[in-house]
Length: 271
Image (cartoon, rainbow, N blue to C red; front, side, top):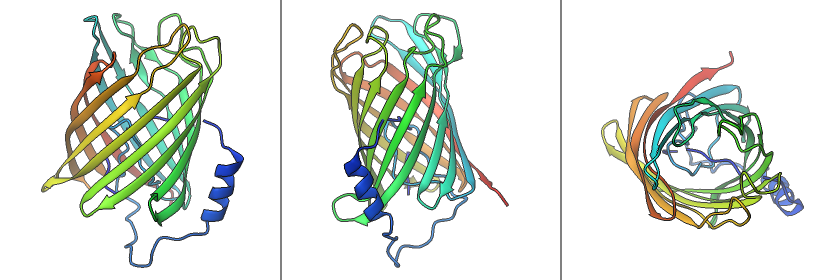
């Protein structure tokens, strides 16, 4: 599946578990060719993720750098790094920890550690296409004093619907995050939605584009809603390594203008 980032989002409900258990027996249609386990499946650089999972016993690394310019003319940067591990035919463990330079500072430190488990519960289903759920937890490992972390424990839950229209991939996400604390460092509840698209351009060059939003939040750290777009090229140097670059621009809200570059590297499997 061609895809161009990743954001994790919560907590499994009984209804979702029932759906997953019922759907897990469903298999990919016979006409679908088997996927090369060594082929990279980028989730970056978009906010969205896709329903694909790394093959069992295989490892994939995503990393890059993003430079942000905020409305108040301050600057910040981050370097998100995500390790993906295939733990089952449709299960992927994700571990993410970023390097963060908070806006308006020259300090750089490690941010909060996040761990998630993506489960693809449907394949080629009517309406939903390839459908996955991604529960996750973020731990307060980053320093609040230096602005590297929020000081909260976050539980997130993300719904993922992926479709292929000829050469063009479409990924739709909707998620919610619940945080500990009193809401002074980060809103106690936050949501996200995304619509991401990607495909080939010419030769090894590809493209990705996304519309995403963070609805308004409440509390001491609450903010107005944000809607933004992301777009840029991708370059498949080898089937197992894909580079990306591009820009993020706001449509509404306080989303910073950002420039990013990075890569996805399918490291290999356990022999």
